[in-house]
Length: 143
Image 1 (cartoon, rainbow, N blue to C red):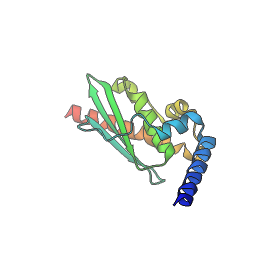
Image 2: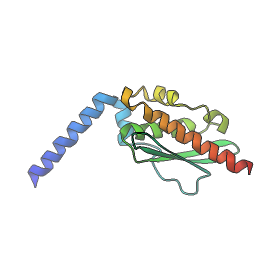
Image 3: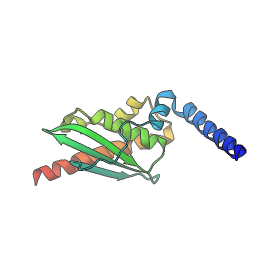
Image 4: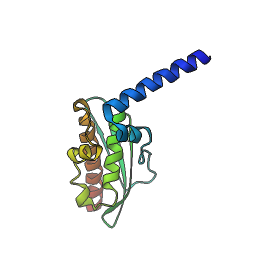
């Protein structure tokens, strides 16, 4: 049993080292401990988008007086989807709906310090999920 534990620890360390070298320290820390990852109860708006890679990001918002007061996300995706959803929520909180509607994938990538080229679509997926949530809120508001 000790040999299996050692093997698993070695594999985990190799994965951690690879993530750190690929994404950097700050992004790896965020991936391991995202601040906004949770399914929100009773949100005012939800947006969900699916990427061509098979990832899904769902963003939940609580909006009061036209300002995003709370945001969270859930994803079935990889580390870059996790950090992209987390940053999208961080950027949205405290912004008006109009201001948050301007958050795009490039702003998320800048806030992250970039992602490998083959993972930049995750930032755009998170942005699209946020825009979907805002659109759903605006649609309900106008009814």
